[in-house]
Amino acid sequence: MKPRLLLGGTTLLLLLLLVQSVSSLMKNQTRDVPFQVRGEETAAVELVVEDEEQGIYFFPRGKTMAACLSGINPQWEGGETTAVTPGMSVRIRGNRLRDVTDMSPHKAMALGIPSDINRMSREEMMLVPGIGEKTSTSIVAYIQSRGCIRDLSELSAIRGIKERKIARMRPYLTTRPETCGGALTEAIP
Image (cartoon, rainbow, N blue to C red; front, side, top):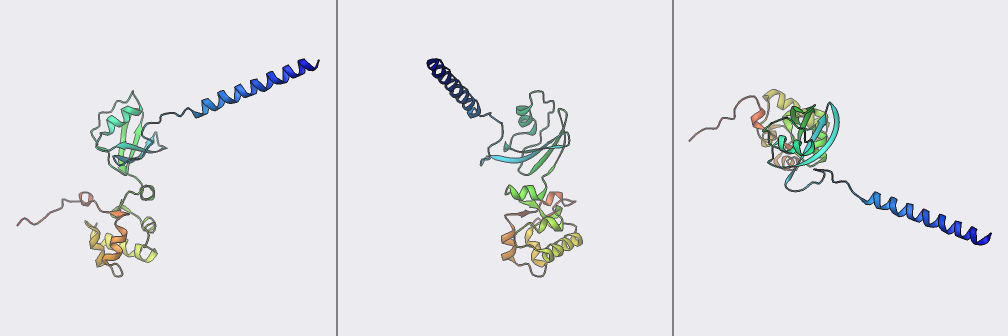
């Protein structure tokens, strides 16, 4: 009876080792998720499908949204020519692109993407290092009085904001003059 017990115990041990090794091999196989790796030639894009937040993807810069989305979904029907830029928020319904906007400032800042100061709330501005409640309130009031600002250096007109503080804000903030409700006019010499 003892040899049968040893043989049964050894067989059970070998089966457990076999199951464990097969299980670990299956866990080590990584799925190749497209657009998961951030690089110098990629742009962070928030992708929202059917109004459910899906996540941040790193698409190649300069490609069109149609080319990127057809790489994710072979049944993609859209022929959009919108170029991929950092900080985009893309909303999709079915197999069609519904809306392209800017990513929310708190997400963009977490990814190291500057946000348009003209579109930020007072609370969002307070996420920027060096901007507190008082400064953010002053900036919002200044922007509202002017409609928008076309360059961050305009903030030096606000009491307490000098070029040094503006220089510390530049990695987090930007302006987009093309969204200021009118063409940017320059004097021609």
